[in-house]
Length: 607
Image (cartoon, rainbow, N blue to C red; front, side, top):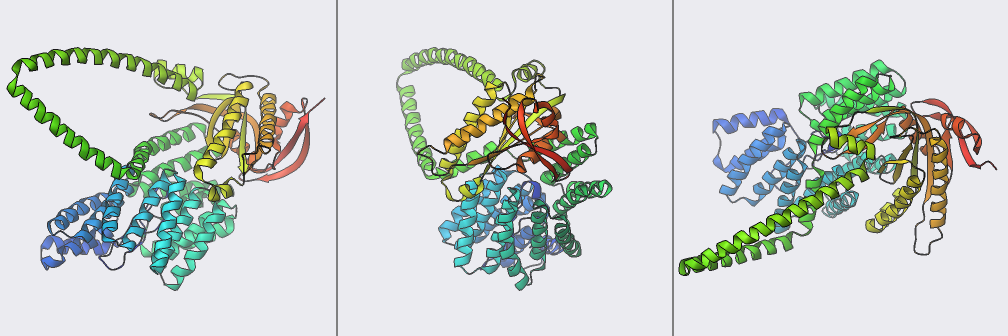
């Protein structure tokens, strides 16, 4: 749960930093105060010298994003009239908050960067640190981890230098929350344990509630439901007391998880539906999407496949409507090259003006020359059309090849012919997950470009291996690799082929350790499970072939409970490969949400 920052030395400003599955207002907003100030503003009974301050206070305390945008526009117009740099900065910041709250990340990022320009011109380090924190939250949503760490680190360093204890604690809390989004609860708790005592010492009740809730989420990720539930309930109690209902949507979802782990399905569904109701009440697209996903998971786990698929489709629809990742990525590129772009724009404008003057002079002096130019223009236009058609045909062929690369051939053909793909159920599919140990530790200390290139080196080899055995790559998630056998065409020996591929993956990783140019060799864990899955294409613009079902979840658990350099398989897979491979029974091991399951290590092929 991310928080607002407060600024020193100027009008109060609340900075909305929430994003994705945790999008909601933070502390610092007081709707009753905003309503009172709106009455004063609309009455006109106030000293005109404080008009900007009143508008700033209104904008900083309204929780509704549409009203934030309306009043931030009014604040911008008035600030420009009075040439007030401070309040122009404030207007950009609040507009970005409103846009981010509505899910318009590219627009929010644009407003935030305008505020950064003003902070740099004013040499105001406090303003700059606040904007760095806001921008970091946007990059967290697009999973640009390099920029997230850089902007948060810079902001924390500035707050520490400026001795701004409160905002220093808020920035650490938000960075910890981001690690929570990345499923790294140990790292998250390191930051929460630093920020919490500061909030307590400063007697900040609302941020302390967020800190308790965030700790509860971290404990839940660690598999410690009892202490997680205690923290979350305490946080919800404080938030209800203070009348801050929106953050509760996230905590309700996590409470649903805790009750589902205890197989108390009535409690789990009750918390998930309450979360959805609150999210709809406040128009929070990101939270609505998360609630749909949670309900889909609950229906799947309780055996209602049709209801699960229905809610999953709603989740996909809301997820796609919230963020245009491409636009945000382009915004980041624009900022890195802003000076060059501005110079080029000025140069292009100058050249255009010169060309226009030249054309006007020639047109005035030589009418015949215009006729010749027209003929030449028509000829060039015809040539351009021919070239364009050739490029279009080439791009269409390229798009078709690309579609076949990202989807199975049969699925791509169905998508081209009918415009959609019917979800299919496969009764027997083997699913494999891999994960590199110590990847997170390396990512903290190794140049991101080197790390990504190294990861691509391994995944390219994995792609070649699964292609060799006729298996289907599904996707990569961070440093995890997922593939399946037995679809889109059913085959009888998919489990055997999957185990053979797994041994080759381990062999490749081991051989890679001997390379002279690598300074950080990885160890790999592999898990395999076999069973029924549902497969299909999700998304309406960026197609993705995906599979879901209990089989996938168990395969992921097999990987997380495997050991370095070992292949851990479920009982279902063991029954299909035991005549071909030597397997060692590990006993019945507790699996989250599944109880005890029999597991086996595959030691090698039988002679």
